Length: 127
Image 1 (cartoon, one colour):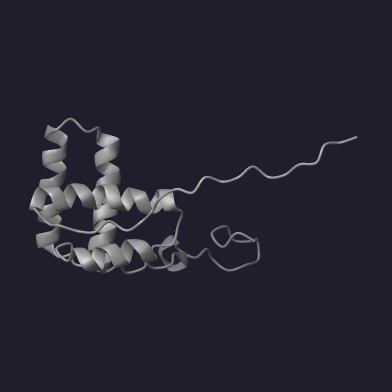
Image 2 (cartoon, helix red, strand yellow):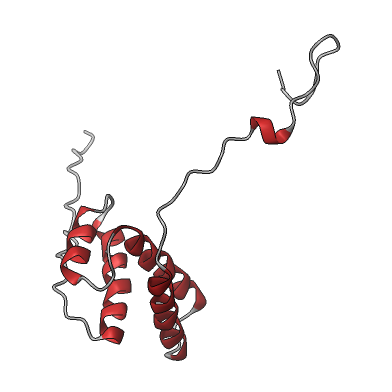
């Protein structure tokens, strides 16, 4: 039964605000980090990177900034290693932070996210 559409004998509909769940709270990104991220994005835009690439880098850097200080490369490497996802997904974080570290002159050891070639599955021939 739809809560917004009353049955002929049922109660009045519930307003939309009462049925909606509140949004989950996210960790706050310090304004200093937001400014640094925007600086990186502007410099990358001037180098000719596409808007979609910049959007991806912005998401990755903001996600890192929610959990770790962007100016502590040791913690960044550890965070990227522990992110749940494929090696290609982790590599996207490495690329985004690599641009950040180059622009701000930070040295960091990139975590190993090398792709391992998958062997083809064995499929026996049908006689």
